[in-house]
Image (cartoon, rainbow, N blue to C red):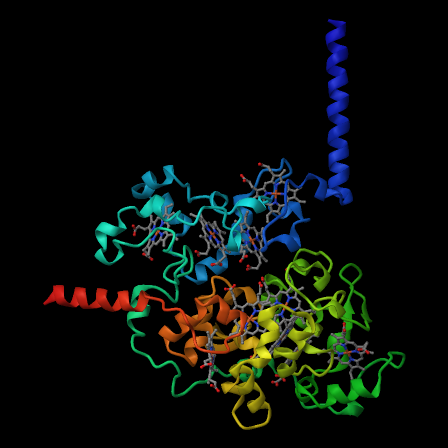
Length: 448
Ligand code: HEC
Ligand code: HEC
Ligand code: HEC
Ligand code: HEC
Ligand code: HEC
Ligand code: HEC
Ligand code: HEC
Ligand code: HEC
Ligand code: HEC
Ligand code: HEC
């Protein structure tokens, strides 16, 4: 009896000590030791913040996935939302693959089974639920199940540029549209966002002891902010969250821009450039990146000023030169050889209008429409991942403003062409438009 208590006590102490060590280690920053394996490309930046996905008992919170991703999936009209699988009519399909849970298809810490976009399923997984497609659609009879999502035809979630009606309305378009222009930005046409009268050198309101160079005064007074009455202290006076005291800060962070530029800040925090800041972690730097970066930039911290400079805020510099200070993969460095870059240079020289130019930002930070104050406005999407993968997300936000859909689909399915940053013609042919045409003809014939 006594012996049993002693043994139990021994275990109790051992377990207690282990638990104390574990929680100490987790709080103390030794989390890596307990992580079963690397996280996916999408999450590596925030992997140390275990609790964003895990409960204290180390279970995975399904809600956590939704909190960060539901809005984007809803916006693109997810073709397979969870709600579809709560419908009893679809229950039989869940026996093979329980699509009510994100982690059925997106597991973590398992690099050996992880494919692009954090998918941890074999490529032919559509088969589990759509075995009968060959019978329903004669055109699909000979297709392999691992081709549904790899041939530029379908995605699991975002089919906003691939659904049949969209395809059928873009048949027979020329490769290059006659009017090839991107949308114009319109945000600042809204008078609610203008502060006041234009300011000059003499109006600058920095405190006497603030270091300021002539360059700062010049840059500020000749650009957008001074022109609409935004003064030094509008950015540099920072309020202490605890005491409420307002003090001048030499290097204000993104929070100083937030109030006036809420859309841009939101996008920035949701994408790869700002996602660490969104979790209260240190800013992202190229040294932590998984993709090739320039060595000189290894330790530059990502904030708004990384692309915008601190006082000039030149959006053209931000759209190409800023990116190339950091990015150094084949695709990025090839851009300056592309016909798109030539358009960008021509616009700088005044030979073309700026809306005809194609910069890195035209594809990765496109101008998108939003409704605000009851009006449709066009703003720059600061979350580059909204248009990155699957890459047909770029079709609607960018390419089809200037190119026909067939040309665009072909170009985006051609990996070599992407690596050359779209220098040359596509060498791949995506069949979906032809299928949409046949289907349209078939239904029209059936109606007659
Ligand atoms: C982006 C979300 C995310 C982050 C961040 C994250 N994990 Fe995970 N973790 C998961 C998912 C999803 C699983 C897989 C569950 C499954 O396969 O059933 C998992 C599984 C695990 C498991 C295996 C437990 C089990 O149920 O099989 C452990 C242990 C674990 N994580 C530890 C960590 C630690 C420690 C950290 C922080 C250093 C961390 N994780 C960060 C999402 C995350
Ligand atoms: C704290 C917010 C957060 C949580 C929690 C979170 N994610 Fe993410 N996730 C991100 C961000 C930020 C990215 C990178 C930007 C992007 O792709 O939109 C990302 C990327 C992804 C990607 C795309 C990867 C790629 O390479 O394109 C998938 C898939 C994904 N998350 C699924 C999940 C699932 C499933 C869960 C729940 C286990 C989850 N996420 C939890 C923020 C989060
Ligand atoms: C049946 C499998 C499956 C389930 C369940 C699933 N996904 Fe996905 N997910 C995929 C596949 C496959 C992709 C790759 C791109 C595609 O085909 O849409 C993907 C891509 C993504 C992406 C990146 C691309 C994009 O379109 O934004 C995000 C983010 C994502 N999933 C989040 C989620 C979240 C959050 C859940 C849970 C609500 C979830 N997924 C449930 C299969 C699944
Ligand atoms: C877990 C089961 C499941 C998986 C896996 C699955 N689907 Fe579905 N899919 C459904 C259900 C349920 C519906 C809605 C009912 C229907 O139309 O049959 C649907 C509908 C569709 C539709 C009609 C689209 C629409 O917007 O109405 C298409 C196209 C489609 N799926 C393609 C795919 C492709 C391609 C894959 C693989 C990338 C896939 N599905 C994987 C269950 C699944
Ligand atoms: C639109 C916002 C904004 C306005 C207006 C602004 N600044 Fe700044 N300033 C910044 C940001 C952001 C940084 C930090 C840049 C960084 O982190 O690299 C900065 C940095 C500085 C620095 C420190 C380092 C340096 O040399 O770049 C000084 C000094 C400064 N500003 C002075 C001024 C003065 C004087 C004015 C008014 C004439 C002014 N700023 C107007 C945003 C602003
Ligand atoms: C007090 C409000 C306010 C603050 C704070 C502020 N801005 Fe602005 N910003 C504006 C207004 C108003 C404009 C519009 C100018 C126009 O209509 O051309 C503007 C314009 C811009 C532009 C576009 C310039 C162009 O040439 O088109 C950029 C980029 C910008 N701001 C970035 C920032 C960044 C980064 C910060 C933080 C360091 C910041 N702003 C802080 C009000 C503000
Ligand atoms: C990765 C580079 C990058 C970062 C980081 C970045 N921007 Fe931008 N931003 C751009 C580019 C490029 C444009 C112009 C694109 C265009 O003209 O189509 C732009 C445009 C803007 C504009 C002009 C108007 C509009 O329509 O949206 C504002 C305001 C702005 N940025 C604010 C910010 C703020 C605030 C932050 C930080 C929260 C920030 N930016 C971070 C690259 C960046
Ligand atoms: C200060 C350095 C810096 C600047 C400037 C910068 N980036 Fe990035 N970018 C990064 C880092 C770091 C990452 C994260 C890479 C990772 O998580 O592995 C990233 C991620 C990305 C991604 C996502 C890549 C992926 O595979 O998920 C894209 C796309 C991107 N940047 C485009 C741009 C564009 C376009 C510009 C200019 C408008 C730009 N970046 C400016 C450093 C920078
Ligand atoms: C005409 C459109 C277009 C232009 C211009 C463009 N890109 Fe891309 N970019 C793409 C596409 C498409 C992908 C591939 C997405 C996928 O399928 O993975 C991509 C991928 C990327 C990636 C991710 C690479 C990786 O390995 O994960 C980065 C980073 C990037 N681009 C940066 C840039 C930079 C920097 C510039 C300008 C110097 C630029 N891009 C110009 C369309 C473009
Ligand atoms: C603002 C308009 C515009 C946008 C947006 C745009 N392009 Fe282009 N693109 C052009 C023009 C104009 C040319 C021809 C330039 C020339 O030949 O001088 C071109 C050339 C090309 C070429 C090279 C053709 C050749 O013969 O060498 C490819 C490939 C291409 N674009 C693909 C894309 C893709 C894919 C996207 C979207 C990710 C895209 N473009 C977005 C206007 C645009």
